[in-house]
Image (cartoon, rainbow, N blue to C red; front, side, top):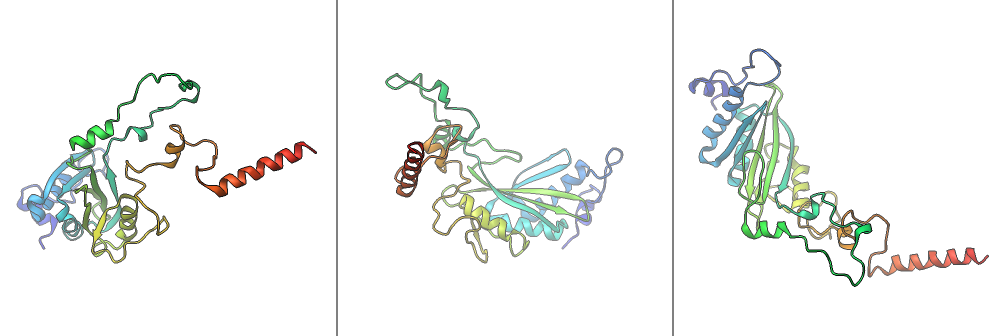
Length: 262
C-alpha cells in the first residue's frame, strides 16, 4: 500500500499530517482534510458519491456496496486507528416527532364541536414523493449509515455515510476491520432494522427477543402518542385491554373508599 504522504506528494498537495500555520495548531488545514477525500477517491473510485470539507472536519458519502472497503481504506491508508461510533439516520420528516405541540388540553375541542382544522401529514407526502432532506455530504434515501473514525497519530477524523435501500437496508459489517463496531451494529440492527452482512451475531442488545418493530424509525408508533397526543402520556393510565392494570386500579379505588368510610 502507498502511504498517505506519498499519495499526497504525487498529487502535489504535501503531507497528509501537515498542520496549518497560525491559529489553533491542533486544527487540520482544509488541504490536509481534502487529501483524505482524494485518497478515498483513489481507493474507491466512483463509489465515493459525495464529500464535504467544512471547518476542521470532513464527511465522505460512499455507495453501500463499498461500505466495508471504505473502512479498510481508512484503517490502512489513513491511519484511522480509533473507531468512535456507528449508527443510523432516518430522514423521514415526521411531524409527530418534531417537537411541535399539536394538542393542548386547555384548548381541546369540546365534545360535539367541529374541529378547527386538520393538520397535514407532511411525512406521508414526503414518503410518497421519495425525497428526503438530508445533511452534510448529501443523500438520496430515507435511511443512511453514519460512522466516525479518528487517527490518534495524525489528530484528524472522518465521518463516513452511505445511503441504504429503504426496503432492504443493509451493508457489510465492519467487525472484521474494527472490532468495536460489534455492539454498534447490533444496536443499529435492533433500533433501525439495518442488516450487517458478515456480523458474527446480530441479536437484541436492549429489547426482549420477541419485540416487534424498530423504535428509532420515525414511523414507529409511540404508545404515549397513541393514548394521548403531544405532550404525551403525563399521568400513568391503564392501557386499554390490560386487565391486570384495570384490576389493580379497581383495587386501589376500593381501598380508598374503604378508608374514607372508616
